[in-house]
Amino acid sequence: MQHDLVIRNARVVTSGGVSLCSIGITGGQIEALGTHLDGEEVIDARGLIAMPGGIDSHVHISQPSGPGIEMADDFASATRAAACGGNTTVMPFCLPEDGQSLRDAVTAYLAKAEGQCLTDVSLHLIVKSVDPVTLGQDLPALIAQGMTSFKVFMTYQGMRLTDAEILQVMDVAREQGALTMVHAENEDAIEFLRDKAERDGRTQPVHHARTRPVPVEREATHRATTLAEVADVPVMIVHVSNGAALDEIQRARARGVRVFAETCPQYITLTADDLDRAGFEGAKWVCSPPPRDTDEQAAIWAGLEQGAFDVFSSDHCPFRFADKAGKDAPGARTSFRNIPNGIPGIETRLPILFSEGVTKGRISLERFATLTATNNARIYGLESKGSIAIGKDADIVLWDPSLTRRISQDDLHHGSDYTPWEGFEVTGWPVRTILRGQTTMLNGAPVGNPDGRHIARTKPDATP
Ligand code: URP
Ligand code: ZN
Ligand code: ZN
Ligand code: ZN
Image 1 (cartoon, rainbow, N blue to C red):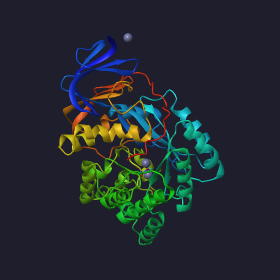
Image 2: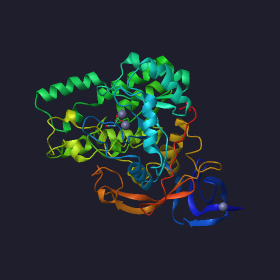
Image 3: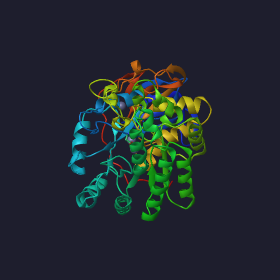
Image 4: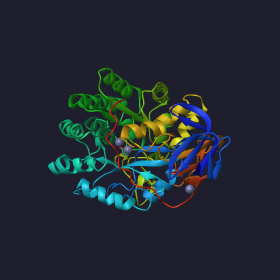
């Protein structure tokens, strides 16, 4: 049999383990795994590792971000950076503008993505209001169209839902078979600490971290998992930053609640000290929940090693420094309160976990694939994706495990004008990304046409 493309001599990571074999690709799908495969085109991947293409299941692209502030990435730049970082699918959130219906917001997002994407895309929804149209019409219609997961926020003025509202949304999730994702931080506690800090003149970026301490996240994580228990739905706790929150998740699981957990590169590599840089520089590291300390990093690592985390995503939420610091003059912001939350990380997620996890011997190649692609596909219902297996989309990333690089803004492809990991050394870097059989990145450069599609999903797998 002649395949369109054969990848030879790679160490191939599948659910069954790691083996030296060839991958035969035809019509954009994996047609054969074995030896002696022939293809019209052959890639010799000797010395490289073939992994399922990364699925970044938590990113923000072109999201409305408040008056005068523009997110640094549109779909073209975000997916270009994603492909260069070894990803083949990204899952951005659709946030309605104030007054816009969820359905209209989705239409507008899909139009922005159309023809722009170097990865496949599959939207999550954000539910920021529980009006009858959103709950009774838009959500069921959009879930039926394959947008089978949505996020609710327990923090951020204008976005947060009350417990009563979250229960209403979870009830729709239960009826329609969708997955609820929760941003778990206690807004009242944050506001109390923030108002106090401002009254005392503590307004520098580091006070963003100090006014969102671990108990604020721990309590909200307990409440989110309890609400899921009451509503009898599975729940995904996103961007878990510390051991106490993870303990709440484990306790809920022990009670039989179906809880998934996500963590991100910032919680294994950055600390609150990064927000404490001179001037307003620390604004570059402001995200929520904030990075913690090395003890909490160790707790997150233990969770990654022991399987307490299901997925590892970036929470890419890119701004330019001028927007972080205040538009007219750097440092013009009077308080950390006004710094847009979020950091860029779509291109560096996989190299950071590979280097800190696989290269340093903390996790296996199989666990890496599970956390960065396989579980992301399984949990969110991306049936054709997430594994190197016959019949799946040929979404593959080739890694050079011995390539050592220093992360540098100069080499990245995102729209932000900085990276929180400037100078961070990693060993292991993706050298070729393949989306449905077509190369989208080669040796660090994006290639090919933006052929990414929006992928409708099946009902999520509610089995943790
Ligand atoms: O600071 C963050 N993480 N911004 C992105 C929005 C969110 O909460 O995920
Ligand atoms: Zn052919
Ligand atoms: Zn969040
Ligand atoms: Zn996020």
